[in-house]
Structure formats: structure tokens, C-alpha cells
Length: 131
Length: 168
Image (cartoon, rainbow over all chains, first blue to last red; front, side, top):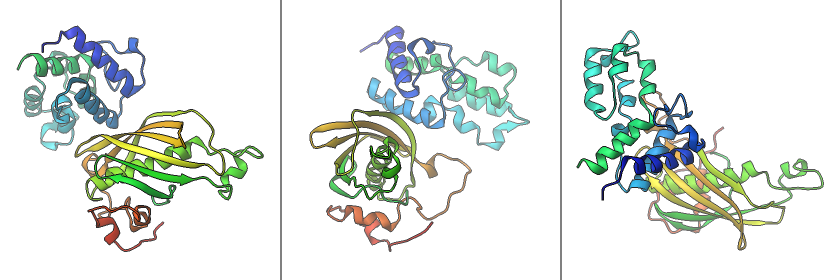
């Protein structure tokens, strides 16, 4: 059953309100999970569990938050930035995320900014509607 | 989780749900100060009781092989005081469990009266902290917990098989 992006966003908004204890109006599409909504690492697992229940699909954590795995790989990071190999891996892992801003200055400290509400909407939209 | 804050399990369905009992007594010293002439069980200790009930349920689901750490209190709502002499029933259920951790829901009851609703998240800590080293031995589930499950006929005997340890 197809679900519109707006419906998906509203459900995700509910998930994030419950998981992170934030208000509805804080959960905007461009809000970052860690910076704006105060998510910590365990919250990512909580969000994954709640998304699975809400949408009735299996959500592998490394698919939804793929950049988490890159942070621990010294081959992909040099001088606090993702190497070109790292960027290539990231692009392959997050086809649902807009990387144009990040690619200009791929500092790993900015990776956290890629975890936006919109990225989750894109991921779920992709899973539900583009099979 | 090396101190025991519940008395025993009374129901246990592996990987699904469990119920434990906690009897509250005025011999618990903190009740003398919390509060003088008005002893009530601190709410944080109700959370601890639920964390032990749910945590053992989560640990047993994987044969007590994971180090199960309380990672998040998703919800804690309290509806009434708990007083010395009260017998609490702690109902815990696994909502989701994965290699990385688990989420649980829980209710504390005194008879038929709902006292609290406590939902928790647990981390399987070895699966989540890349690069950080923890001791090999499972410091969470030591033999001291075996007595809590004495009335339960569990297929899994890994906890009971361990010698009783006293550390810390």
C-alpha cells in the first residue's frame, strides 16, 4: 500500500517525539537528529525499533545510519576527513541522502549533520514506495 | 547489576515476558530517611526493580551470553506511593530484541492497582561500543542471580551452572 511522503513524515514525527522526548514542532524535515533533537547513540537503536513497529518493515541499523560504521574505519578517514574512498563508500551507503554540501568539506565531525529527519523520510519512502 | 533488588521471579516465558515480586519492608534503611514518619519507596528504586526484572528477561533470551546494560528509560510514570508492607508485582515484556539490544515495556502492580509503567531500553554492550574493551567475563550476569529464578523451570541452565560469585 503506497503511503504519501506527508503521511510518512507524520508517522516519523510521532516516532521521534516518543523516542527523543521532543515536541512535534521541533521535528522539522531539516532538523538533525543529534544536533537539533539531542539524539544519542542508544536513541538510534530506539528509533530503529520504533520505525520497524510503525511501518511493519525490518530496518537494518547500518542501512538507516550507515555513516556510523564509517567512523570506525581508519582506511576511510584521513586528517579528520573522509578520504575519496570513504566518500565513495558513503555515497554507496546513503543513496537517500543529499551529500552535495558535505562533499565540499567532508569533515567527519559534520557527518552527524547528515542524520536528518528528511533522510529518514527518504529511507522509509524508498523502502515502502520504490520496491 | 550485582545487587539484587527483587525477591524472585514468579513467571518466565523465555524471550517474551516475565513477572517478578518485590516485597517492601521497613527494614530497608533508606525508608527511614525517605521520608521520616512518611516512608515511601523511592521511584528510582522502582525503576531499578523493573530494570532487573526486564534485564534478566533480556539476558536469558540470549542464554546470558550478552552483557545487558540499561541504556535508556523510555518511559516512567508513577500513579501512587509504595509503602512498607506492600508486595509489588513487576510485569515485564520484550517489545523488540535484536543483536544490538532490546526494548521492554513494564507495569508495576500492587494487587490489581497499577502503580507504575516503566519502559526501558537495554544495550548488548559488546555489540555497540566499537573499539572499547570490556572484561571477557560477563560481569552483569553472575551466579548471584540464579536464586531469583529458583522457582522457574527454564531450559537454559547457563546461569544456574555458574558458581556463585561475590565480587565488588
